[in-house]
Every structure is written in C-alpha cells, then in structure tokens.
Image 1: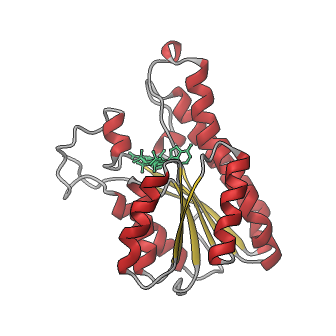
Image 2: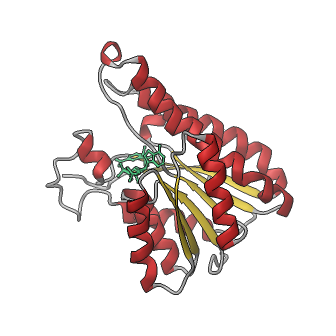
Length: 241
Ligand SMILES: NC(=O)c1ccc[n+]([C@@H]2O[C@H](COP(=O)([O-])OP(=O)(O)OC[C@H]3O[C@@H](n4cnc5c(N)ncnc54)[C@H](OP(=O)(O)O)[C@@H]3O)[C@@H](O)[C@H]2O)c1
C-alpha cells in the first residue's frame, strides 16, 4: 500500500454526485483537490465544503466537451496547485430512450461529454505525467459500458468507448509508470439516477449504492502498491431492495 496524502487530484464533474463524494474522500485523505465543473456555482459550493479539511482546493468552470475551455481550466489548476498527480474523468451525461426516439443531437451530446470530454481533459493533463513518469488516471464508465440494455444505445456506446480508450491508454501508459483504470458502477443514488428514472428518491441508503461507496473504491485502488492496479472495477449493490 502507498499513501496518497499530499498528492493533487483533478476531478471533473465535481459539483454534484460522485464527483462531489470523491472530492470529500480525497480531502479526508489529505489530497489537494481541483474541482472542474460545467456550473461554476456547484464546484464553488463543493470547494467551500472542503474548507473543513487541511488541504488546498481550487474550483474551475469548464465544459469538458469544449477543448479550449478545458485547456484554460487545467492551466488555472496548475498555476494554483502545481502538478496534477491524479486525474478522475467523472463528468458524464445520459440520454435514454429507444434507438429510433433518440435524435442525432442526443447522440452527439452524449459522445461529446462522455468520450470527447475524457479526450480533452486527459490530453491537457497527460504530457506532464509522462514527463514526470508518474500519474494516475481513473475513468468512470458504467455497467452500461459492459452490456447494452433497452433504451441505452447512446449512453452504452459512449461508456463502451470509455472502456476501450481506457484499456488502450493503459497499455501505452503502463510503460511510463502511469496507471490508467476504469470504474464501472451499476446504479448509484445521485441526481443522475433520479433524472433518468433509475431512482425514485426513496431507496434505502443501507441497500443501494451511494456515491461515497464508489469514492471509497477509488481511494483504496489508488493506495495499492504502484507495481500493480485493477484495470476495471465493476461495482454492484449487494442486495438492492
Ligand atoms: N449515478 C449512476 O447511477 C451512475 C452509474 C454508472 C455510471 N455513472 C457515471 O458516473 C459519472 C458521474 O455521475 P453522477 O451520478 O455523479 O451524475 P450527476 O449527479 O448527474 O452529476 C454529473 C456531474 O457531471 C457534471 N457535468 C455534466 N456534463 C458536464 C460537462 N459537459 N462538463 C463538465 N461537467 C459536466 C455535472 O455538472 P453540473 O453540476 O454543472 O451539472 C455534474 O457535476 C458519470 O460519468 C456517469 O455516467 C453514474
């Protein structure tokens, strides 16, 4: 095991849900946190929540589907916190419906955020990691990236793509001492789940997976000895009822 205290993590989609839970989990571990989000007020709120921990934080506004905004935001992070040790590509959206009911715009939106978003952020962060021969990249996919279901064609296509790009980048980057891994959760009780009718907000938190559970997995994976890593972690609730 290794300590992650004192490292710096950049989390995309950090204003709510899983990204917010990751921000708290890292700060509790003494990791400095850069919060990137589409809505400035959301990431600022989370940065304020982190004031209770003894870590540095910065919040930056960027739409991950916009390469120019991402580049500027990553520079802002580096100017404030220095080098980025850990990148969590978490920002994501869903569009669900039967294939013939999803528009081309729906498909492009999902692809631009879920796939091109990872491209833009990783492209801005990775060169420094390669130069330092150290780094961690965690991409949040989904169990929808492992199997298609009725109504998930666009989302599943994007999350399958996340796993493909993660494995390919992993094979390139392990030679640079950089670990690249994916996390593939099934339903997590966040706004995403309620927005897409996966949750009615009444689930018992003792039985359904919470954002904090996923954050615990990420933190423990990053603490593993640097000589190895878990390529893809598929997360399930034990007995969701
Ligand atoms: N919840 C689940 O059941 C579940 C299951 C499997 C996988 N996942 C994946 O887990 C990740 C996080 O999901 P979540 O449940 O935490 O979702 P969420 O509660 O809907 O939060 C999504 C976060 O991503 C941000 N975001 C969305 N589009 C963005 C963009 N274009 N640029 C920058 N930030 C953007 C949102 O920013 P704003 O605050 O500005 O809206 C928000 O902070 C996603 O990749 C999702 O696909 C979720």
